Amino acid sequence: MTPTPAPTPSPDEGILLTFPKGLLGFPHLTAFRLFEPTDGYPLKFLQSTETPEISFTCIDPAGIKEDYEVPLGEEEAEALGLESPGDAMVLTLVVIPEDPRRMTTNLAGPLVVNVKTRIGFQIALNADRFPLRFPILPLD
Image (cartoon, rainbow, N blue to C red; front, top):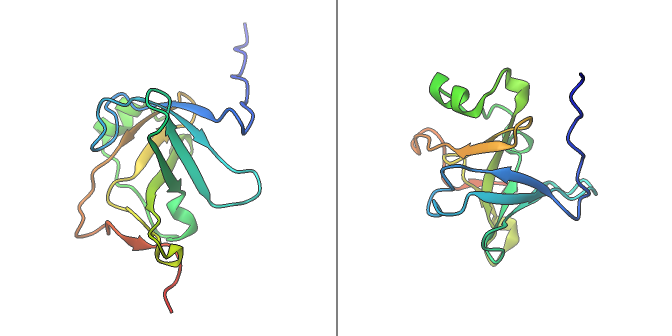
């Protein structure tokens, strides 16, 4: 018997993701929907399904820092059930200040999600090596 692939949700519904340990500062929130604009807009939106007023803006860090790689340990890769690097989606959280040209992303706290199981974890990396506030747009 061939398994039936999971239906692809419409952009309006988002993709349901589970973070069993929650996110840093929000350990009690484990279920989120990821909304990805279809118009090529690089920012994505992660909204809690348990507390919908809590949401985060995030981005694929490869689009702003080509050499960014998350050093994932064997234990973390095993917990995520990753069979190959292509099974991982990496996102970083974005801070948008009053002047959006100064928005930054947190490279020290990436979200790593298994795209097959839709289970993810937030990984805490060394802030000396991975900036907490990496500029998204070049500053003039």
